[in-house]
Image (cartoon, rainbow, N blue to C red; front, top):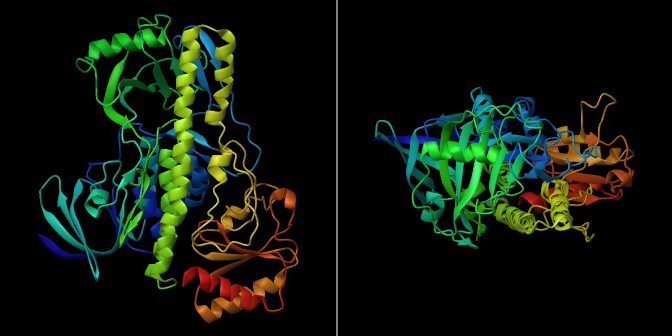
Amino acid sequence: MKNNERTSVMIVGGGPVGLSTALLLDRFGVDCVVAERSPATTEHPKARGCMARTMELFRQWGVEDAIRDRGLPSDADVFSVASSIAGTEYGRSRPEPNLDQTPSWKSIVAQDAVEEELFKKLKNARHVRVRFSTEVVSVEEDGAGVAVRTRSVESGEETLWRSTYVVAADGAGSGVRRASGIEMGGPPTLAVMSNDYWKGDLSSIRHSSDCAGWLLFPEDRNEPRLTILNTNGRDRWLSVMKIGDVKDERERPWTEAEFVAMTRRYVGLPNLGVEMINRSIWRVSKQVAATFRKGRIFIAGDAAHRFPPNGGYGMNSGIQDAHNLAWKLAFVVKGFATDRLLDTYTAERKPVAQSNANFSLGNLERFNALEEAVRSNNQDRIQFWTDDMDNHTHSMGQSLGVIYEEGAVIRDGTVPPPYNPRVYTPNDRAGSRFPHLWLDPSRKRTTLDWFDTEFVVVAGPLGSGWLEAGRDVSAKTGVPLGLRALPRADHRDGVRMGQRGVALVRPDGHVAWRMPWMPSDPAKELAGALSTLLN
C-alpha cells in the first residue's frame, strides 16, 4: 500500500458534479484529487439538458461553446406528443422565450458530452489529479483530517490519502454518504425505468433534429407509453420506459431483436436500422438528505438529492451544489474564513434541492395526466395538457430565481419576490443571483463576469466611497475584494441599491449583503458585514 499521499480535498466521483468541483477548486488554487471507479467519463447520456445558470458557469469556465456545440439547436426545447415519431402528432409544446435575462441560454445537451468537455478542461488544471479506475474503499475522519483509502480497479493496489475535506459526488447509491450515516428523506422508489441508448438515422422525419423528445402513445392502447429523447440532434436516441413500480416486472429483459422491433414500431419506420449502444435500469426517486455535511465530509449531486428526471434539474442542481461549496472550502482552506462558513452549505442548498424535487415531481405528474388525456381520445383534454407541458420546459424562475434565505447572507428585512418557477424576477436582494447586465454594446461582457474567486464590492454609479472603503477593508483584513461600479442602477433591471448604495457579492455570484445608501462610515459597515459572513 502507498501511504502518506496528501491533498486538501478528496472528491469521490468523477461525474459532472465531481468534475465541476475540481474545476472550481483549481480556479481557487486549491489542490484536489478526483477518484472515479469507472475507467473514463460516462458513455451513457443519463441526464440531458443544462439550464441557464449552469450554462453561465460553463461560460465562466471556458467550456460553454464546446458543450453547446454538442447539443440541440437553441429552440429545440420542445416535446412532441404522438402515436409514433413518424405517425400522428397529437400536440407539441412551445420553446421557452428568451427574455435576455442571461448571457448564456440553456442547452439541451447530454451528460456524456458534458463530462467529456469538463474533463478536457481539467487536463490543463494545475491543482487537480484525476484518477479513473479508482474506487474509494474507506473514509475515516479523525481530529487532523480524513483518511481515505483507495484501490486501483485494474491492479488492486491500495493507496492511503490524508485529506483535509472530502466531497462525495458518488451518485445516488453513495457509499460515502451511507458510511457517514447521513439519512435520506422521501420515497426511494416511485418507478423502475429502463434506459436503452441506440443509434439510428431519423433524418427522413421532419423535426427529428430540433425536438427534445417524443412522448409516444401508440394507437394500440395495449402498448405502454415510451419516451424517446434526442441526445445529439443526429443519430443517437435514448428510449425510456417504465418497467415496474418497485422492481423490474418484465418476465425477462428484451432481447436485442425484440428491442429493434419495438423501436421500429414506436418510431414508425418498419425498416429502420437500429444499433443498440448500451442500456441501464434505474429508479425514479424523490429524496433529499437530512444534512449535506457530516464533519469534514460533504455530499453533493445525486449523493445528496434524487429527483424525477422530468424538467432536467438533477445534474443542474448538482453542478450548482459544487459552485456553492467550492468557494467556501477554498476560503476555509486559505484561512479567509472559519469552519462555520461550511455549515451554510446545507442551510443554502437543501431548500433548493427540496424545491427542485417538488418541481420535478410535478412534471412527472403532468406527464401522467397527459397520458390519461391521450388515452381518453378527448381532443380538448389532450390540448389542455399539451399546452400545460410548457410549464415543464419553461423554468427560468426555477433556474435563475434561487434565493438563499439562510446561510452566508445578511438579510435586510425586505420580502423576497413571489416564487414562480416559470418567471425569473431579477433583483439584488441578499441571497439572490446578482442581475445580469450587459456592459458593452457588443454584448461580450456582463456583470456576471465580475464574480469568480473573490468577494466583489459592487457600488452604485455615484457610490465611489464604497470602492474606497473596499480598498481599506481588503488591506486591513487580508481578504481580497474585487471593486466594481455599475454603469447604471435601474430598478427595472432588478437593481435596487440605488445611485449611492452597494452590494457585497460572493464568489458564486449571489449577493451576501446590500446597503442602498451611503452611511457616514462605509468602511466600518463593509468590514462588519464581511466579518459576520466569514467569522
